[in-house]
Image 1: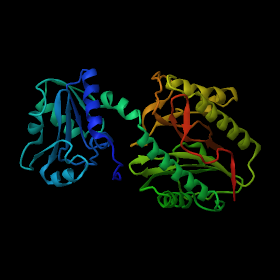
Image 2: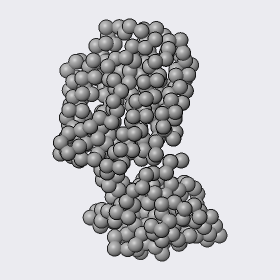
Image 3: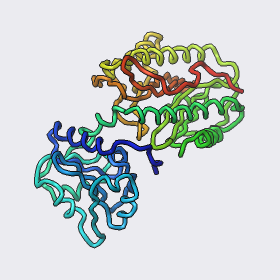
Image 4: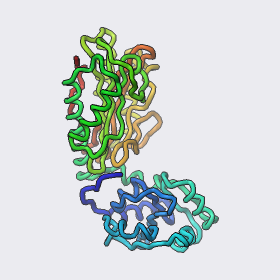
Length: 370
């Protein structure tokens, strides 16, 4: 469950969503329980087999349809007093109810995360409608964070920095990966997170698997360890990666870490309003390719972050979307040498009026731990 957000201008967001729908030729946006719903009206609805849906239509007041038993909870949320809340009962047909709230035909943008049973139910009662992903309407709104959202992301990032600072003061040698992961989860919450969401601890050869699940492998002296973790604070997410060395690193680890550090810095320096997202990816990739490790950089350079860990914009080859002030995303190049080790360095950054700001401040140098 997401923690309650700081006050936001939900009326403005609803109006902007209607404007975006009009510009995209969309007749109605149907938003199921999801981060989209939280963003638009501040209601963190339960995803259930019972239909909950926000309907946003250009030129018409928005309405939230909820199961009757969820009416008190919806009314107590930020949605209460913001818009009409309509209800349906268990003995009724929610899809027939929502059908009368929508135009008879046209283009409906439905939540990317709407359950298939609800999409099929909507299709059954509106066979003449064309259904498209709601991200076509809402992703641009959510990608451009306002100052309040950026501050929430900065707070989450500072908390993640604090968790990293604590773990590197501890002995890692001889501990199991899952034990280190357990500490990271605790430190995130103690530093102010409402919940920890993920924790990657990849020691030695396990570091070459970017999404390695921490296991019972004991961390050995002289090994590098990839630490990638994050959570949610006041509704907004954190995500940080650092690679540390248990004792003195080998020359190869030092070399690879320096390449990744320089690639991460090159990508950061490339961030400016108007620059294509793929150019940031290219800046990191060129450094790694020139060092001879191009085939070992196997993922995109970054992903957007906000109410979700991964959301637009995606910093990847082929994405020509121009960056805009207020966009927030990770910069996380990596090199993965199968059977040996991996290195990744990740910060969350925000696009400013003339460049970028790092939201993570933990050292990006190769930290040596016990």
